[in-house]
Image (cartoon, rainbow, N blue to C red):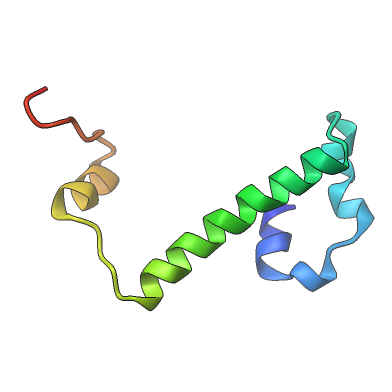
Length: 73
């Protein structure tokens, strides 16, 4: 559902949302899920559009899976 909403939003149907309804989400829950999906699509596009790149430490954490640690921790 998230992939379809991302790649083909105009092709979404009620059937695409049904699995979430089956899990107990109501209209408000579906709207919140859609907002989360949209935000996860929006921020990378915005960053890419401005040519932003993560700090080297963030890139390393993403590459290795080792979480960042606060300075002095």
